Length: 483
Image (cartoon, rainbow, N blue to C red; front, side, top):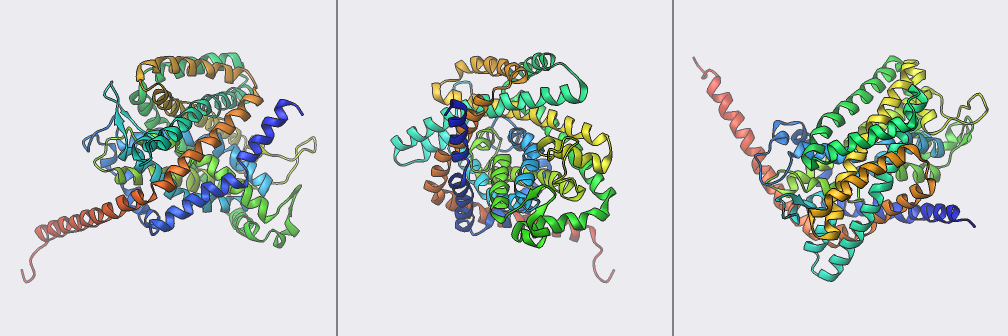
């Protein structure tokens, strides 16, 4: 057996049922332990994200605004998984895989909240006056057993650095160069040089530079993709009911739809669950711990408040962006269709065909531009994750410049080379990141609960105070009775 096959088998194992059960199971455990407060407070979290306060740097200490911290975290999670990953899940697990992506995301909300909240609670200030935090600092500072905390923190940081070069860089750069080459015939070497230079210019500015770009790029690209997807769906509204029927029925009873056969695809409930949960977890990274590194840089006066803000990243990533891709594919009728050579459409080809069915040739450009922007933002977001993990390993930020330069140069390698073995190894490290982080979430679940309940009393008082102010304003401007 060659090395590629061995690594591929290991990759399949670490991203197999055991890991998925751990990821989703931890979310389920925390959701029940917190009395579903993360679900109940999702409207509050969304209100905070969309409000003016999230863009302010006046609350507490930090390096960037709460909104910028969220956008930088989203930059790393909204990537090719939202376009290619959803198509892969629906090809392998059928339309019902989308339902299982939604279900895993619901419990992922609590995992994302918990890891981000703990990262802020246990963050530190480095010698340059910058905030440093994430699961490695949570383990080091939060565990009563300091040796266990240091060991798990070291492992998480090591896996994060290694994963940042692969999943966060090589694969994304290759997706960009391939898309530009196929759609616009731009030579891959030109793309590679451009990516390396652009990345280095932004990365050298640190978190403040990355967050400024992310705060513009992430909302802009997400709105473009969602609007184009919705335009296509609504423009062909008659196809929506059948698409939704397939999504919900084939998630639980594939036999009810043509015996579980859809074109060239045979669907089962187990495959629907497996691929839906796997792609969902891979896309939003809830439970992986990566988003917590960025959350720790936010200006905030309370770790729970920022935890709620960062929690919405899972909502935007999976419930919004992934759903657009899934609805377009399910409603288009191209799932299970073959190309001119008789090969079933899958991956990026499936997504492009679905968008083209709804909005014509422009659909290919929308998907290509989406992949380009999503993948580039992922490179920027993952650089910060990797850099902070690198800083933790060396216990000093003075070597960060080395990491930034090397990371930027690797973008060129990723754009110009297909290194499947390296990608699979990086995928393994990406999964291994989750293990110490999930252990940390379970060990510190009592701390999470006490912090949430403490803040809940504060939130209720804050809400009551808001109602009182509104009532006073109404009384002041309203005419008195009897006048």
